[in-house]
Length: 291
Image (cartoon, rainbow, N blue to C red; front, side, top):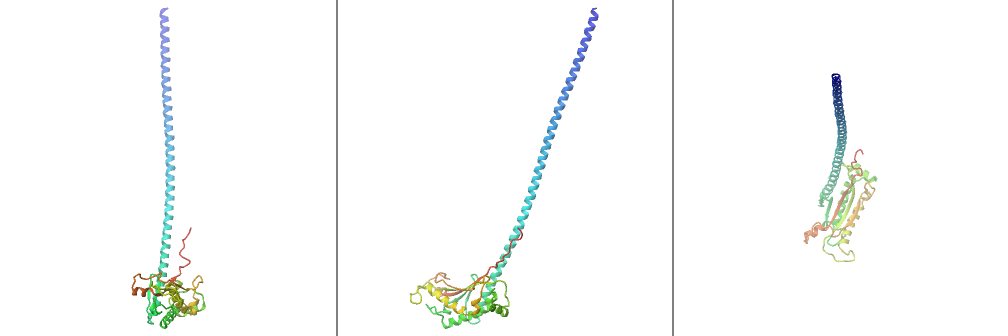
């Protein structure tokens, strides 16, 4: 009887051990599965994060490429605009250079024509001026042209009648006839204005019933020279592209001296009639191409 109970106890212990072993194995399997699931979840999260980073990097790279393309396009447009601006600047410079060369040619033609008639004048190419000395035109402190002065102004008038129509856009018939008959180098650089300017020295003059000061003296001298020039029907009708008369007159007194020394030679230099030549600037300068 005791032996049977002993065997029964041993069987129960064996079954308990086996169940405990199975439980341990189950727990191990469960733990393994939990760890595997956790690792898989971590790997999935890592893969998802890596994918997000890759997508973000791709988007950043795409934005960088687009920005680079836009920058390159902007740089290309800027280069084109710079090239166009440089081209227009060069064209404008060439136009202004051509205009200045034309003005100098006119001044030299006037000087050469007068020198051929023994009327020697000075030319200032920088300011576009032909200078007529006072001694060639007037007596001291007088505004009426001397006989020699009158002849000199008539010589100047003849020269201007031959030269100015070649550089005038004036549509009048006389100008067209003159251009057709005498102008060999007529071009598109036109004269805008031709000023007869009177100048005096700074020595004060005694007021009288003819003029009160150097300002009035210089103005009356300029007017007398201008009136004799303006008796030419051809010169009187010359106009510029704005349909304005080319010839004009002004007096500056001693306000625009050529020299400042208080010497007789300097005073004589400041007493003069200036013929100032102003050229037209073309209305249609080089325009920007495109937008």
